Figure 1 (cartoon, protein in one colour):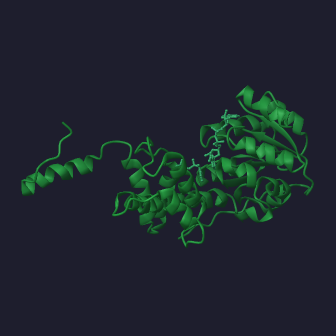
Figure 2: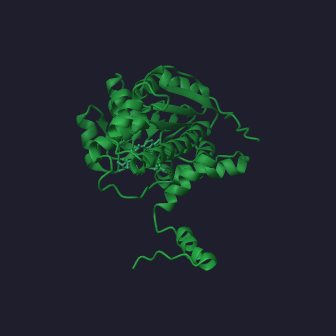
Figure 3: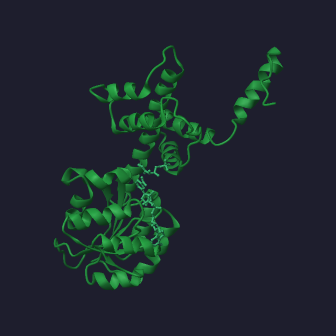
Length: 316
Ligand SMILES: NC(=O)C1=CN([C@@H]2O[C@H](COP(=O)(O)OP(=O)(O)OC[C@H]3O[C@@H](n4cnc5c(N)ncnc54)[C@H](O)[C@@H]3O)[C@@H](O)[C@H]2O)C=CC1
Ligand SMILES: O=C(CO)[C@H](O)[C@H](O)COP(=O)(O)O
């Protein structure tokens, strides 16, 4: 396995450990939490989103509003630190393209979204600023306790931004520099693969309990497991919450799971590295399989008739 990413050769002409202002771009579910926690941490924030209402709300929460990216840059002054929390993909490139004429090697851009690590490597090469790829975990629930931040990029930039990472994360232990450019988003990609597999494992266990020999209260099972059991976890607490709010049979919750991009990247990378990840792949396949009638199951149904004259189950 050869995963030798090059450390960026650029270094700023002068370093500063002082924290100035943080620009936050993208004020949705996650970006707004970044704003709130940075403000609560005693730092100044300049906030921009293409959605004017989101900017006004962030302003009410103590951020300085910006009507455009160029206004955000003007308000930040020298040594800009800009945290992108926009959807992965085109929105990141669009923001960077607009920011780029205003950036130099003293500036730092943090991408806190779920970007593919190879896109982050490209962006790190293309920008004049120091680029930190920051995998973010904790979801909107992180508003209260903070996120877990997995960060890749130059060490000086990571150290410079540490006060703000302390504020956005659960604390100093809630963030870490994983390594050079790309490594933050690489670790987050694998994190999401693990997330898929854990969700699948809990799902299968509760499926058997829901359809097994006993009439069980699954909220009670989850609560009991969450108190001291080997398999206790935050995802299991979310299972407990789901059964409490939806009932043991999950009520009207559909047999359909959206998402899938980060799990797909994990499986693709595992194939490239020839590392077996059968659980993560199975979880991803189950997710894809939830989106339509399973052709493979329908064919198996018909093939049993072919070889054994077993009755074919039909929809009508
Ligand atoms: N929601 C979650 O649980 C988690 C999300 N993430 C990642 O964080 C990133 C943001 O996710 P969310 O906050 O959930 O998305 P969201 O959809 O709630 O918010 C995205 C915000 O970005 C704004 N936006 C889009 N393009 C923009 C642009 N060019 N300039 C300025 N603003 C722009 C939108 O108006 C919106 O307010 C994504 O990459 C996501 O994958 C990471 C971990 C957990
Ligand atoms: O990163 C996350 C959690 O850790 C996000 O919630 C992400 O959207 C989850 O991935 P998917 O949408 O594929 O389920």
